[in-house]
Length: 274
Image (cartoon, rainbow, N blue to C red):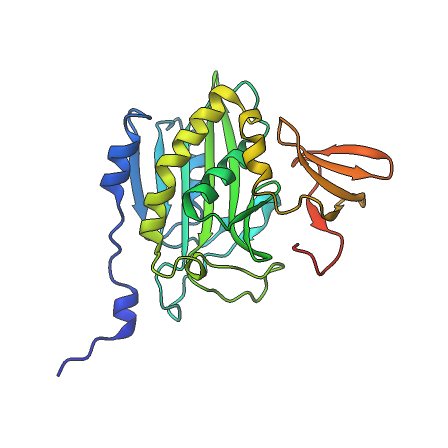
């Protein structure tokens, strides 16, 4: 009798839906390509390297494992891909890169987050400016970077989604996983769910900006009505976002607008999501 090593099952080749994604996206982005790598330092870093070298065609880059994933403000994104995890890969990590020319870039991370949650599950919420949460825990993060090349500005939209449960040791926020909501989900099927709608959402943002999405964002807003504390020490009650995606905070000195470039936001009390 032959016994199968469980780790061989874990490391079995993943059937990524590259062709299906290519067929869905190419009509929207001519010259679009899909690339899957077994390991890389960071999909965002790689696409930024390519852009600076003049490679600016539309591309989806997926990594089964990242060794130096990054989040907002230089924070590390842990891929969590080790051989003790029953689902491989336990996180979906990808970056979408293509030239983008919106009149106003404000609110792009909110538009991306809104597209992600709408593609995945109605119970998911958005924590301004770029995180997906479920039940007071972080499920996904978004990192947007751009490179200016003459008259062209190349945008790289990086997304990391926890698929399977993972160890929260060393993380400031306990992690949630998509499999808690969708037990049969895996990284490949998640990718197929989100990429097409995400491309369409970014293109809509390019022409219309964030304003048409404001009401939909409020329906997913984790912070609305909560007392929050900004990194500069200011505290107040979160009151949604304005038409440009700035966080509105009602303070003792009146209503203040907070942008992602200025501060990070933490709920003022440990019992609240952070």
